[in-house]
Length: 424
Image 1 (cartoon, rainbow, N blue to C red):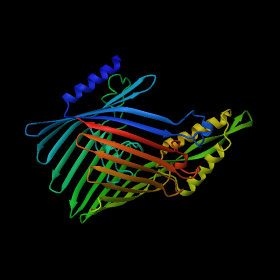
Image 2: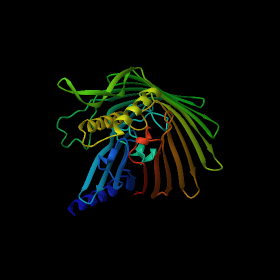
Image 3: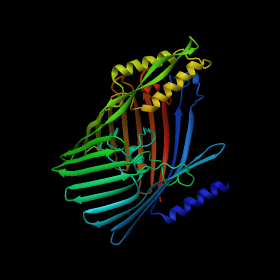
Image 4: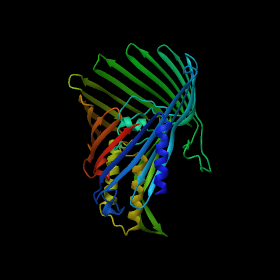
């Protein structure tokens, strides 16, 4: 009870002290069948389950000296109540000071969200972003509540052109006591140089990034008339890694006593990733149709993916939990999938999104991510009712594809959820 009183007092103080407060509650039901390649015979002990959490997002912006100096702070806290305990996680998303020394020079110091990219399905040039395919959150909410990086940001601005330089220092602390709320580890020094300009409806951004290796990228957006938008985003890296599943004999002295899976890592030189797409708006109907193709230069080719699926199938088809080599193979396969993440295992993907707005502040969308190699995919439906003070949401998502396919391996076969956000 005392813990809940502290949480309630903390939230009440935030509603008075901060410029804006979002209070969120989300409920999600996950359907988890007992049999899949990544969970044979339900060895992981997973069952269909309901999950819910309360979220509290505070933000404040303050300006001084005729807006020459601006301060922003935001914080995101989540509370997961369960039948046994209450788990609380909290982090500072942003906390920075921005100084405009003149109309063409701005300097920002502190923790800030630095976003890059024009794609919807993926952003290869979002070098400071963290990869996260969270199908329970809309892209808009994911971007709103994302965590920034600690750094130093300088922008030079003239009419039609902006030059920007960002330095994010390495932050690794042996004793994190008291710091994990303010700072997240930054494993390397990161340098970003960005140039943005507009030319007759064409918006172009070029990027150069260094964090122990060089990466370069470009974003292009072109608007034709009032209804059609085209965009392209691409990035190339000095080096990258690809992974393959293999098999290895286990010896007991001179005798082979079993076989297990291993992960084979291979280095790629200058892998390229890019997104090409656009959207068209049917203004009279309030419908927007978006399509994108995503080439993932770090993913597996068609041949490599087919070989990988056959390896997974042969290892898991006759799985026995009592077999130590089978359990070791399962852990290796799960580690292999985690290194890529769903939506990043192969090289070729497509995305189709159809959204509609009604006059009574209701929005609906259907978004499907399609693997173009094995034709599996993930589709999510979302309906949102939004007023100035409250937002309601219902979502339903499901994976489809053969068992021996990328999204056919997803443990959560479908999910359905609801949420409410109150803006104070």
